[in-house]
Image (cartoon, rainbow, N blue to C red; front, side):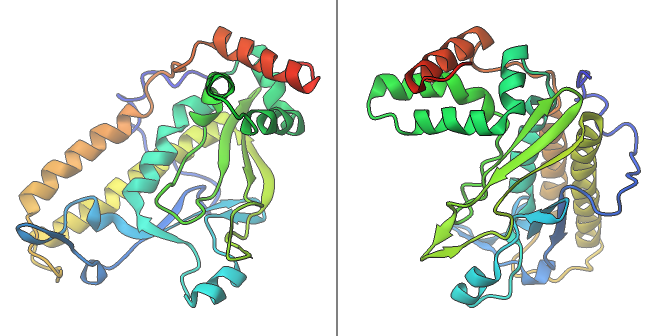
Length: 280
């Protein structure tokens, strides 16, 4: 399925999902609880800051971005799921959507369907000890990076990928090395969750809609004077920022084009496989 020029149709049709638990779950913090950013003009709360909240992803019987009991006790916190600006999570997740939903060339799809083999090749790249090998690894794996939401603002950020195999969208995760002071950070350690590609795209659209809808309601409350914040709020500026974010979210669903040509990626993977004595 092509992502059409979804920039024009992402918000055109409301999708009602059968699953009551969305793939991308979030909860916005109360405005009065959000700590303003300190600027040269004093405390400030813009649209992005007002999306502060908690984010998590139910994937079958596991939950991505959910902290383990061990790390919660170590950090002496009751916060169970990742907490940051939800707009930042949306930017990463939606930014990987078009790539994740796009078909892979036959050889790369075959590799993606064999996660064990893919991991073996990645290990060979990760042990690169010179610039030439590092460049080779970048060329070989940039396509996977485009499908990997990277939440660098989280401690030991969870590692997972959106990869299409046939008409399935597979979410692979491996957080076994995400450890702080000897404690596993995330409950979801290793696994895979599959869903129809169209359902994945619908989930991404739905995530964008829900966040924009909740932020629209938040701005309406600010305009009505029904919100007590820790900084002065400019409702007009927030409206302008809201439109900018709507445009940005829609842009993530344009037709996908890989940064590295597929031919170059395949040649690099062949070279890495040869070093390991593997076939690709």
